[in-house]
Length: 80
Image (tube, rainbow, N blue to C red; front, side, top):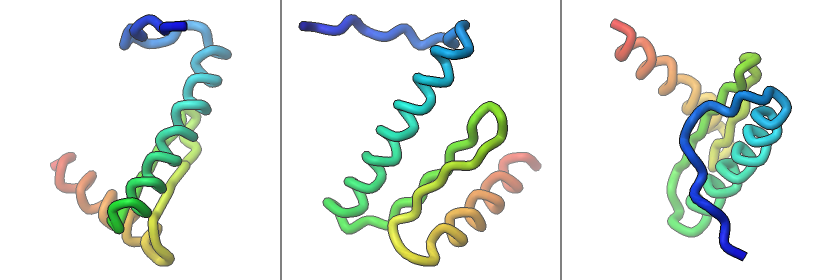
C-alpha cells in the first residue's frame, strides 16, 4: 500500500490536528534520540504545542538546561 504525499497546510479539524501533533512529535523525539546515539552527537530539541506546553529532548544529563539557555540566547538575538 502506497501513501499519498501529505499536503503541507494547516489541518483544520482540531482533533485531527492534535493527533497529528502527538504522533509527529513522538516521531521527532525518537529521531533526535537515534541521531544522538548513532552519531554520538549532542542533540537538543524543543517543541511547543499550540497550548504552550513544552516538550524537550536532550541527549545528555544537564544538557536540557544548556538547550534552554541556547534557545533563549538565539531567540533574544533573532528578536532584536
